[in-house]
Length: 168
Image (cartoon, rainbow, N blue to C red; front, side):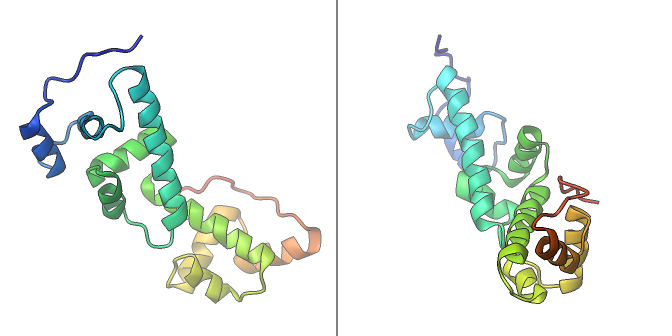
């Protein structure tokens, strides 16, 4: 059954405060989404909320090379701090871990399917420092990029010592 009850802060004055980032309330973004016809209160609001999380993750997947949390917040009309907490709550990973994971997945693909040198791959996936890329890749996969590529060539598969990227 849909619930028609709206939070008590719905109104033009509140919408301005939400849009300007003055008011940071867990349901504030949902209020704006409702205002623009993107969501209605009740059962469908939960589905729309889940879709928003999926859209945010797809955005990270497409813009991992240079995506920042403030930029993501602007793109989805969320306060950056709130969005970071929301991602951690919904995915179990921080924004930074989500971006790092996308970078590593793309780096793996390039190592497996291209002959690009490793410094080009590092730059292509968003790292300016080759040493930092090596360290992060080894932390993610358990292999250096060179070891990963060599193992892939020899066996056609790579067994990861770690499948989940964790920040230290």
